[in-house]
Length: 470
Image 1: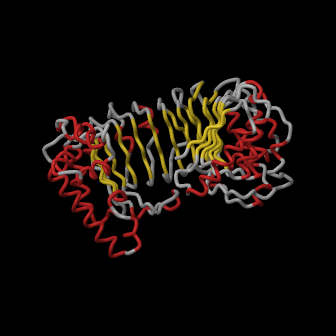
Image 2 (image 1 turned 90 degrees about the horizontal axis):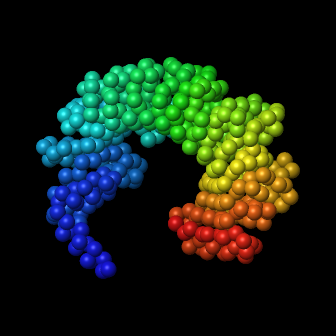
Image 3 (image 1 turned 135 degrees about the vertical axis):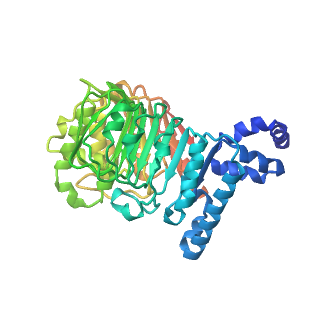
């Protein structure tokens, strides 16, 4: 079909259908449709999902010049106010305002929140965090100036709420919102959370970069829990009998698991904040022991299991350095995701997990940037060129492994060594190896990676090697 014919088909649709279509787009994409024609300049204003995110409207170049940045922010706020004035009489399902350094615009923010409450929105985003904040240590409490009004705590239509960098926020006041299913808190002092979790019907909880957490138990009927870079005191106990997705990234504390779901679809642990790549850290066995204890407590074949387990380079480096790494117990995991730099320091950890995932069906190697083409140097007697040539048998290789997936594949030497290991070992059930190239790979490196993938295919007549060019 001629592309112009497709355009005509869309143009001939009634406005009510076009509004449904643009409401499925991101707000940034929705705004861009206004450039298509005069008709679209009126249609795009009818979207039911409105999100004013500063970073979507300001060019990255303006941040380099303070004067340009101030002018761009003024134009952004003026645009927001004019938009709201034009849609005052139409229904809105989703409303969001995300702007850093909000002190100058408190009156505008107050009016926008009142607008969202008046529209009785189902999803609300109020995010005033600074993009420069990377962990809770960076959060400047003096910049937390926006207070959530009582009208938001009383908004009975809310199904989803995201609050970031607000002052004196009290989650317990949300307890009576019976429709609220998804909440996200970030970049602020977070206290009084336990009463909310005990009484609410929330199914998804996200906490990012929050300080001064005054609770040591995360308890509730949530299906999904994600915690990133938060300030726990000493330990934390998880009491989540219905949890299906559990993600944690940040510092390593003493975690305990009480009354957890028997089968968790997805578990992810990321401790890269601790990984400064100093060899001196290798002398300690404490972190390795804590990580083995963490995996044993949550995932073992006598109790709970994770269908998909995702781990980070720090965990791969440290679990073999536990005083008793052989105490790591077998897991029922069927899909193991290794976020890895494929440094020799991580190899023993990879091997330890392969040994303890006897029912593994899919292995994903998610290569973290940079993924160098050059071979990494050896470490502590571990030579990346020979390590994966050792004739070691793993139960999952001979019994269950069906697929190996490599993300960000560039054809580097370390990538080839480990992929060859799986292709050429006795993986009786291995059907395919899937290689995904990075989307920003230049043509020369794509040709190189394709050549290496063809070499891998020639090394096996039994396993299919599939290359995906992003």
